Image 1: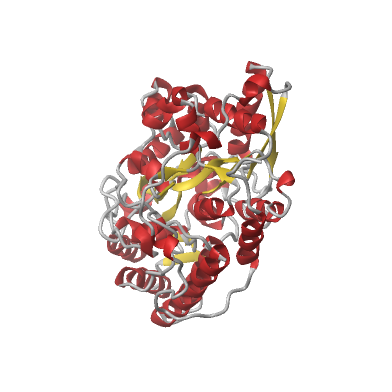
Image 2: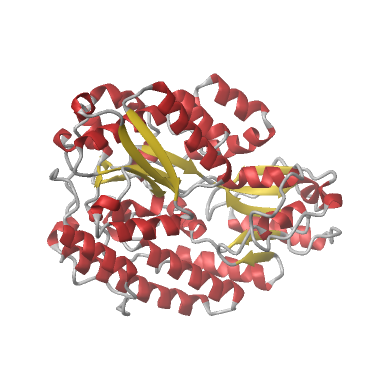
Length: 497
């Protein structure tokens, strides 16, 4: 087996730590971090880990299995790419397998680490899994394959710096393909006008969102129940904190080495919690628990809310609701949209408001990892498919159908994409998200966290307690931080052990 394959002891340890219910710890820094975790030395690529020429001598065709968490149009876009790849050559046959949600995919991947023969050859996973993938020892850094195959380097030379840095650790790029999205703000232009607000001068900060919400509420617009609606998703606080360059964990937000200390107890997190709780208590915000459905979208379609903060991947759902083509049967208990409310609905999209300015934050989404395995031919086949997937025609479709943003300058400048962002109704909305992507600070990417599942679960519990339960924000943040620090401590011990 290759020297980059899973080491069974580490694989079992990582599997255990990601399923364990961690004990409580202190708010202080971890005492258990090993010395190698504090290293900030940039890693060098090792082309020997990526046998890109192994297809030449392999028995054909090489069977390649790809796991993914996508649904609807994004799923269809990936399947279309696989079909086109299979038709373009005879050496590799790609099978694309849906694995449910991000969480379900990660759970199956974790379970498969105990028997590496059950792992896929390529996996599209959530952006939150970067540190886990590194520590599992189960994937090959894209940097190694780029070093082994210089001809493939043009795409990565044109990769947007914000995307590259978001998916890099110690200067080394790990995934080789990407599905990037942004948080954005949807607004009902007619409601804004009725409240004396300009649809061309949208709120840029959370404080300005409150001011706008107060004016909308005071205007007593028929049908409006809550001016602002959103899901209590941990993604949003992460984005707001990153936007003001507040670290969530140490080690350069986890990019210089494995993070071992929580930095979540800070003035900005407190400001976010206070804002969300105050908005809910004053009748300005209708908040829904994470993953409860699509009611936040339906509220915009029914015109019972005027401002929605959500992700750019939701554009296809929102657009379907606006066009009255969403059936609702894909989401259990989703409810419906009043056709009369859709009449004359004038929906707009703006940069997501931040703590200090609009459009600040980090890269979100998913990425594809090349899985290490005993067969060199499968590694070479996985890399070959990844190169095909990164080709401009496929990447254009990944945006048009998959609703993911262009991650390279070549795709950004493609005439089809330029026209789509300028003239298509949904494309104009996605173009706003793209503008936000291009404006990110590449030198301050979002966090890389080992126990990300526990972290996100804790964030959701904290938000629901504060916003829906009226819990004291300072108490809730302290409890969250204690638990998160304990999770970091346990993760460090298990992976180092």
